[in-house]
Length: 327
Image (cartoon, rainbow, N blue to C red):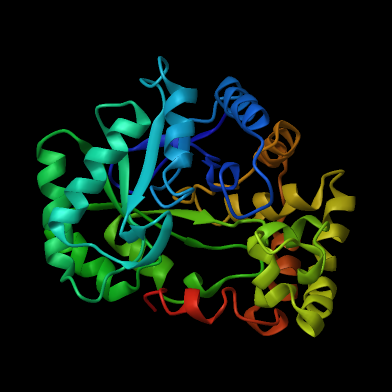
């Protein structure tokens, strides 16, 4: 396993982490037995960064990780998130009031069966709460040893700078892949200026870049892709055509499209630690194969040109979810 440092913080993790959300929601029915086996396999293969959130389930994903990682916590890094209101088992808006942050952290610690959270993210920026108050609340939890590192998810450059001025931000998490590259314009340059690491989620375009995606209507209503604009109608056909180049490069490297998409992302900088999500051992092993793929300069140029913002059709979220992105 290759290991990387997230920015200047000193937090050292495996070059690929594991996004655990799908083990409890969003991408079809959950299979706890296979999820637990996948977590075991991830540890066996050297993965040390496990990403969850209170809202996944809600609460079920943290409970799953708490059971799975009990007794072997010391070598692993747990990342979880606060920032949503949860009522009757559903998220209903954002809430980053300092008192709420503390309540969430105490509850997350119980569910995760641990005495500290390695990386605590604000899940979405709360426009009603000054970022200085959010960062200050996390700083107090760091002083108490309940949190070791502070992170932000889907935050814009202003919010990142405001938070970092109060307490060092270790990592920022956002979507980044061959077909979602908006962070290249201002987010990545800002992070590198400030010495902050970057953790891309959905690095495989919610499966689109693997070559196995289906139109939105083929997925059940409980699957996130059922309402994903890029899987809808004409957008699906256009995006399939744009993503074909990934398969072409894969055939030249005796690799899978998923491995090429991850290898491209890993080559974008040593401060980048993708967290592809999976709930199956076979996909986990496939994703880890990306660490053995070495793309040449020409491959990178071809992929960069083929999948620019202008060649991908549709927003990356539906309208309500896009409203929560702080940029």
